[in-house]
Length: 217
Image 1 (cartoon, rainbow, N blue to C red):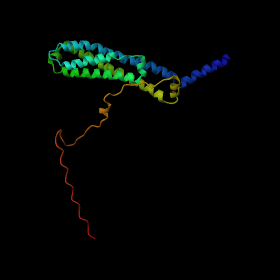
Image 2 (cartoon, one colour):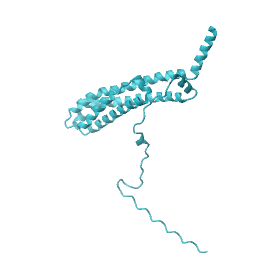
Image 3 (spheres, rainbow, N blue to C red):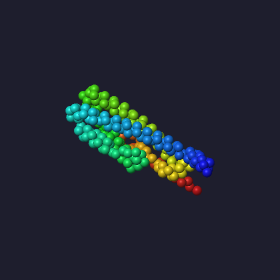
Image 4 (cartoon, one colour):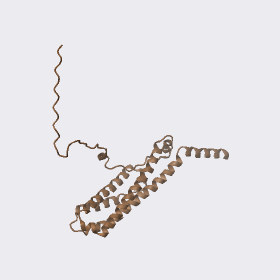
């Protein structure tokens, strides 16, 4: 009896290994690790913003609307509840991505506007915070790319045969991934104009060539 149990156990182990069970475990752990790094870098950015806002407030006549948008976007981004289940919840993942995207947009606007204030640009504290923020954005990009690649590998395994059967047995769902937020704009074909300048009227169409008279028989 023990011998048969041992044989069945060995068969079960071989079956799970051949059907991708161990690969699911490995990629699931890698996904969690990559996600933790994404959160770590987003948190690093959020921690830099209060000092950045305090520095910008010292600049006379700085656009308050731009500053307010950064403050509100940070508050919204940090208010999003992130749990381990977020990785398997497309709607929660989308809310997280949207909030972080709005904060990225608000920060980009603030840095563009700051170019109009020479005294702010010369402020050593502001320049230091700007450099830290740029470095953090680079780290966010690296962390997101690692997460995207890991999730892509996991999802391919989830959809492939026969590992998709293992996924169905153990309830391994497809994981949501980061998407391009301006997908519609990127997918639109560029307008190409030859021989014209912006705002110039289009040239009149050339007159049609006269048709030759029909030959008499």
